Amino acid sequence: MFPATAVNRLSPCSPPEGLTQVQCAQRRHVRQLIVDFERDAGLDEVFVVLTLGATAIATLGLLSNSAAVVIGAMIIAPWITPLRATAFGILRGRLKLVGRGLFTLLVGALLSVGLSLLLGRLAGLPDFGSEVMARTAPSLLDLGIALVAGVIAVYARLRSEAVSSMAGTAIAVALVPPVCVLGLLLSAGEWDHARGAGLLYLTNLFGILSGCLAMLAKWGPGFRHYARRSRLSVVSLGLTALLVVPLSGGFIDLVRSAREQVLKREITETIERLLVRETVTVGQNARLDSLLIDWAQNPPLIRLMLRTVEPDQPTPKQVAELQRLINARQPLRFRLLVERSAVEVVGPETAPNPREAGRLPLTPPPTVPRSRLNPPPLPPLPRPEPLGTPE
View 1 (tube, rainbow, N blue to C red):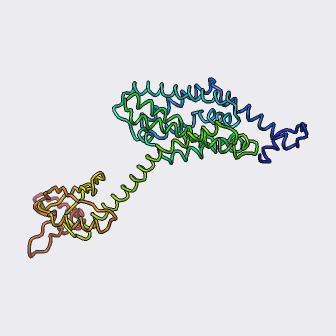
View 2: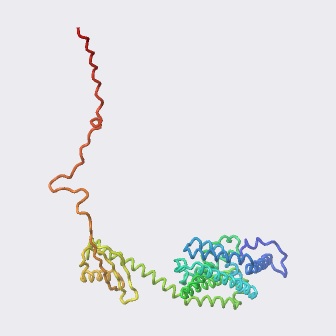
View 3: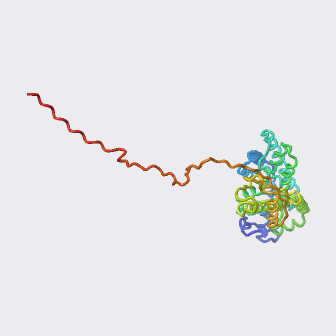
């Protein structure tokens, strides 16, 4: 049912056809929603200007690898409003409203791809930063975020008290940055990564759309009735379900990468403890430079880069013992190879404060009292008496 606060905000009306006052208010509320969503779905000057501005800011932020600038572009982008209007049209079976909303989104996507492609060509960067590459590998987590964001987007339209959440919703599920990433990658000819950015955009698009449909269907019995009868809702949810297949691969890769990072950190800590603290192999003079794990081999290969002052250590026997100790502490079995680099320690021949055998260390010279360095002036000598004249 509609909340009492939403009904109370409506002005009283004369209930037609024997309807109660609450039912009449609900009908007026639905009519007002239709007007609002019709306005949200339209392609007007405001949508075009905000889209171009958000695209320019997002593209420049991606080129400079600035997360703060990209977040600013997310807040400006107006794409959620036509998307939730499309969801309302799908649920109510209003094909004209659905067409207007999809056309607005299509124009916005084409403008963003074109502008970001142009800016990418003008910049001519040989490589892109982490902000671009982070939007080329979507997973099921992105779909879940988009579903929740769609719920909040519709809730903010149905309940004016939650309108302040729209900025956070735009940041959580960004539609413009993935399209800008798509344009930048197309400008550089990176087709594989561009497909990942396009998949992320579709994930956010259909995720928000499905979340909007779910929230509208939950809002009242009238909407649930339309949700059960709407074939477009079934099609939209079906397209969202199809995204689960490619997104599952990304999620599996994400989980596998996280596990590999944890296992690599544990192995690194184990090797450092064995080499230095427990001195099982080469002792205190060994230093671990880097550690790489080739997970493609079976068993996985650990390649250890080690610096040591002993050119013949570690020996093959010591490496085998270290490999045995690592495998005893891990659920997997690894093969260990050590690349040793012999280093020579060079220092001065004498210590800063040398000490001769059998003698005490040198002591600083005794200090001279200040009174001896600057003695007081001597008193003046008495003046001699003048000699008399001879007689």
